[in-house]
Amino acid sequence: MFELMTTDARAVIARIPRLALAADRREMTLWDLAAALPAPSGNTAALWHAPTAEPRPAAESRTAGTVPPASVSGAAPGLRFDREVRAVLEQALLVALEERAEHIGTEHLLAALLRTGPPDVVASLAARRATAEAVDALLARLHGGPGVERLPAEPSRADRRNWRRATVRVHAGQRIPDPLATVAVVLTVMVMLFVLCVWGP
Image (tube, rainbow, N blue to C red; front, side, top):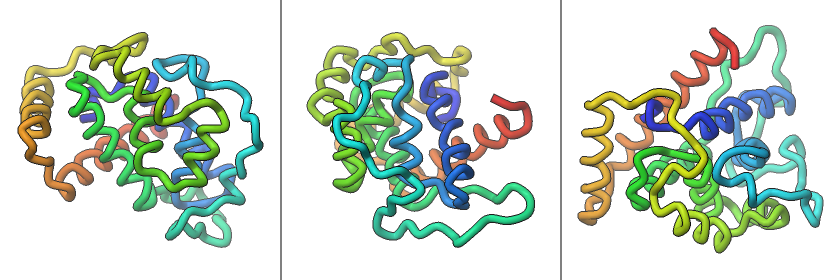
């Protein structure tokens, strides 16, 4: 589904590895995703402002089950998303399908993080005015449309057909099988990271 991720959503994903590397970690965590989301562009741009309470930095914060290695030495490490980030990426896909959107945008990434993220991450986002209520209002206003975000290229006929089928399954009450959806989202993001590493942002 990489082809159906907007350029702004791709930019968010592209910032995550830099944040993990800056914190000297091999795993990319929900704190990295939360730190990568605020941007002056995209559908969620109007939500962000300086935090009213200083959130814990990603390097010092840990969610359950997210323990970074002591250090990363030598060549660039093989970065990977931790289990919680993979779950949020899968949820972002489901949010987009539930909204009958024909893309995955920053609003879907943020909605997924707010709905399924741990309380400390959600609180740090709320301190920047990105609350579940604000995102729900944004999703209602967009009504599945792309807003200011755009796809980098026209999706193929097969991609559009697969997306429509997935949307029908979600709205028919048949949930996408978790392992299959997780694999699809993770592979998509990994391909994107590989392309960014080879050709640069």
